[in-house]
Image (cartoon, rainbow, N blue to C red; front, side, top):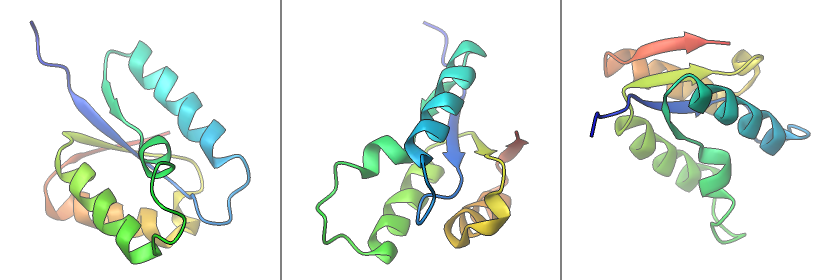
Length: 99
């Protein structure tokens, strides 16, 4: 079986209306392009309600590390977390896809 390229979706979550819909729409589009998608919005929704922002970011960086590519959603520049993820992707020499 051919290994698919793993792509991590990055974008605003905190204080963003309909972030789940935005991440899910991106996931559908990326899967149609043949990517294996890591969608942090889905994964993090299963975390306990007292999980801190720092704890979420730790998990996100681990997931990002497992990817080959990072996909930056529109308005990613307005998200502190997405900016950290992008910088980490640069440091890890990941490919970056902007949509």
